[in-house]
Length: 546
Image (cartoon, rainbow, N blue to C red):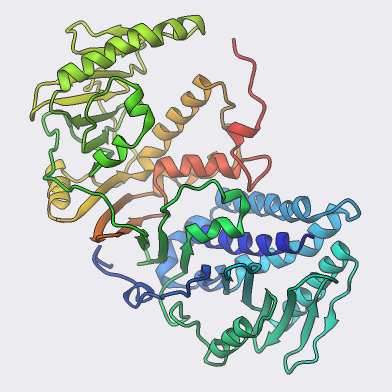
């Protein structure tokens, strides 16, 4: 029975539309989070998407929409939609149903989901099938297409024709013989509602109530948010079996995305079932190692409990895990990325790890044709190979009580090149002051996203070569788009703060909603030959290695 697959297609369409969307202070919150929605115990997810049509005329999205309008972005969007529109046909079609027929019926519906305002709510009551209701604001012509096409899809998959509704609202209802649940479609004013449940009255009546008032409760049309999402990741595994291998103790997430005209603003909360084990000790910054100007700076603390739980940490001679980590990158050479972590016994721990790598890793590297680890001349650590463009290294530094210091280029002052970047870089001292001023801050990340795109792509492509995976094609639509928007991308700031015993809150201000590393990963996903499944580099046959 493929009705559950139809549910997943609609859920995915709403989620993808949300992802495609992507002068307040960092302490501000959108209205949807000021009065948080408390879902019922069986709520899996709620998604409200404002729609590309309304987003296109919103002053809050002016810069984002200008970036969407450039030809490279338009080409990528067209490619993504074309790939997406082949997905329902591949997923839904049965042995007796042509994938092309299903695809042509579903394609205009998914196009409407991206363009129009919509709302999705999914429930999973105990010991009952999943229930969902999806509402989308449509003009009469497109509402008619939804009614006709969805009915045809159901009939082609099951051989049963939906029955015209006899209720006050026009539409149809469908029940496959022997199945306990109904699929219903009704029209209410400008809204078309599709629901699936054994008894859909509670869901349907709730939707009709907010339609009468022309708003969505707690995720209301009256907010400034482009997208609002509530997801219970524990419950999600019951709706999407592919997510069934998720670890336990996953949080509930509330997310809101809006803008201030120049930036995309993302706010959210992660609420865990159990209190979070975090020790927020005073920051210990490796200021003697960090050079300026900077392209990025990341600081995180409270790592010890998490690292201590990892098997690999205990398998390697690493000793007591650090509690803090600082990462930074310089403009210029793509491999100018570094990290430092305070260790109480950094010299001995790094030496033990260096000896382990020399004894256990070098034989394998030598047998497989890779460069090998070498001791540094001053005997403070190891260097992988000795190439001019990339020199992964790890060493100990006797500073601030002891530090493990590593990176991808041992020469930390090969010269910088900031030409072509129109955005100012803040001084290191001002970034550290911002971090220290927030008492409960767990994670801070700042970067000039435009300057980070090329280094992240370079490192990603190098990692694919080393792991014998296919590199992203330089002529792909995704990389063409990144090259086109790169000079227009400014700073991205992300913070994660502990706001309760079991709650973390996050905030991001950025030009397009993503960091340079995330954009590189996004490109890998969008180029996947089985989009929206997998990554291009994992699903494309690997090239023959020399």
